[in-house]
Structure formats: structure tokens, C-alpha cells
Length: 196
Length: 81
Image 1 (spheres, chains in turn green, red):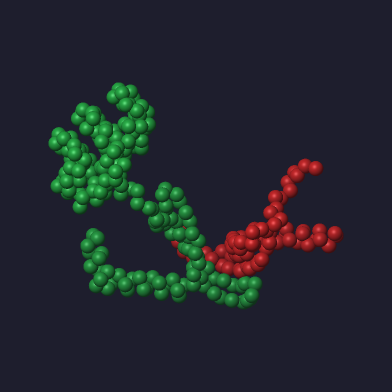
Image 2: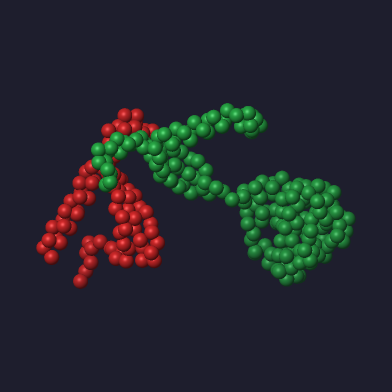
């Protein structure tokens, strides 16, 4: 699979052949560091002064590099596809080799960082339960109605939420029994075996 | 006039429904054998935009007795007005 680079992206990357490969290597290092810890605009200014260009040019160059690396890592494109994608930029063979090495060296770590960006649904933390017997209500006196009250503790993005739920024991038992029976089917057994 | 310990009331909210039940907790994950009576209240309130919100809470018997005493006082004061 080839990367489809936009005209704007190609323009930003066009800055790279205008500097030494040592500088490109440094930009690569900065790009990965920004992916790890977030960007730091002051770095652009320092580099811009040293290279006698505008800090926008440096920023676009580094961001172009970041995007190239994240898109390639996201799609897990092969070495050959990466080389072919970069080939359209018309860079020197030395620069192409440098970019390929940058991709191969960092793609595993970049994929780990990207995996943390997936939306986080609430996850189970713990459960508190209580078995109650309802003796009377506004509408009916002299009752004996059992119910189960559950306090579900959930985690989401580091926050702790609780949900209070209530049901009658027959429904709860039915749900749990259904779930347990479903676990015993061949289909579920196969899935569980593969997860373990 | 100083509002010393006047309750802050959202006078635009309306109480739509007041349901209650008396229950007894007989067992929980932390204690297998209980005999804990409580009063559970389920309120339905409409805010000034008309949106209906449900709020429920529980009270122990002593808490409920305190709750009940408030209403007895309110009823007594209304008689005098």
C-alpha cells in the first residue's frame, strides 16, 4: 500500500533536501520526541535561527516528517511501499535511505503511542451488591419483594465512576445463567482458547 | 437582611412525583447476614426548562425520622400562617 501525500505535505517535506542529512536526522529525532512528549515550539525557533530560515519552515518540515512517520506506522506499510511512497518526492538516494531507516527504527514505538489514542470505554473496576426485601411502598403495603441492588465501579480515562442498578433476583439469575450457558458453547470455547 | 442559615432554593424547579419504599437489606458483599431497614425515595423533578430529572436516595430509619420531623415542623408552621 502506497502513501498518498497531499500537495501541501509534499511542499512541507521539500525543505528536507535543502539541509544536511545531519540536520534531517536531528529533525527525525525531534519528530519522535514530539510524538512521545508533545511538541515544543521553542525548538523550532532555535533551529530556524541556526539554519537562517523562518521558524514556520522548520515547523512544517518537522511536522511533515511526523505525519510521514505516523501514517506509515499506522498502516504498517512495507519497506518497499515506504520507499516507493517517498520516491515521488524526488529526494536523493541518501535522504531516501535516511527516511527509511527513521521509519524502520521507530515504527514499533510509534505504533505503541498510536494505540493509546483509541477511545477508552468505561471498564470494570469492582462491584458491591446488596440483597434487599421490599416491605412496603407508596402504592402497596404488606409486601415481600426481593431485589438485588448493585453498585458498579467503573474506570474511564483514569476517572472513577459508579452506577447504581437494581433488579429482581429472577432476572439477574436468568442473565447470569444465560451468560454461563453461552460460555459453554463451542463457539465461545474456541474464542476463549485463542485469547489465552 | 442577612441570610444567615437560609436554605438556597431553586424556586423554579417543580416536584412532579414523590415515590417511596420501605426495604430491608438482608445480605451484601461485605456482610452476609443483615437486618438493615431503610427508606428509599425516588423524586421526579422538572427544572425551569421543563427537563425532567430523577433523583433517588436512601435513608436509615434515624435519618428518616429526622426527615419526617422537618415535614411535621413545616406542617405546624403552615397552620399558623
